[in-house]
Length: 335
Image 1 (cartoon, helix red, strand yellow):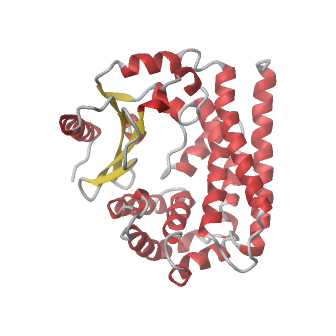
Image 2: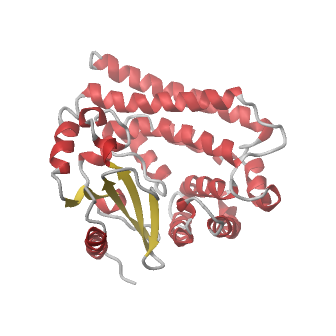
Image 3: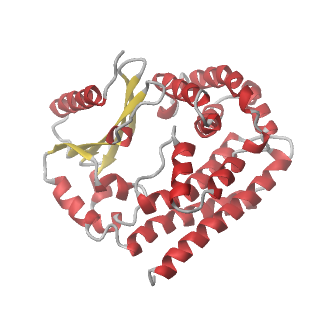
């Protein structure tokens, strides 16, 4: 199937038209994510990220709708009250960048005029950019502290613990991302951070990030052999009642083809982030006996048991490096 940005945007608009007809109470709809870039495809697959703003809290809050084997809708449903204080959104490291320049697809109540006027006012001022980054840093430090206070069992991996660890790493990396633009994309997390670290004048951070994921213990040539186990766990977990929408079976090919594309590229280790994150998310819903391949990978990569304390030490040092960057920015701008 030939997929172009224009055909994807057409699908997005058709979807919005249908939803507005069925749900006239919707306040606004906007598009975000990879379709805002010139290159939304990875492994000839992509998703269409839509945000529906409801007048009230609505369930479900996330919905995945497969369109083809290569494309699916990823819909977030946000309540209107999350946007009530636009000036505060300037300091929000997630909603702030999202609302700064999305693609408007529906605006029945002048929603964007009100919200964007507040978000965009002095958005790029150093104080506000630093505030968005520092909020991410605080979240990362809080998560690191929680992990440090709860030492893992020496011989047992925990997907919940690894997910918390990766969330801390994500917040730390996004400190730098939100200084210059949007948060890092999930499938391209390592690719984008490598470029970001170089542009920021700290290319050494890209190597540090890889070590946080156990890359110094990874045999890149054997990564392809892990994908069948990953795929089996993803599909099993996604088929369970009440499964996390991120594990919807319609997203499996989206991740799989993206990782295969990265394997064939110049930086095959870039697949470590989507592989580890989605695999941990999947096995968190499986029985202990059913997650043996994931356990084995965590052991080999030093992400479990007795090795985990060393990873936390590396994360501590990484956070110190990010803190120093933000402190230098504050000093240079008299904050």
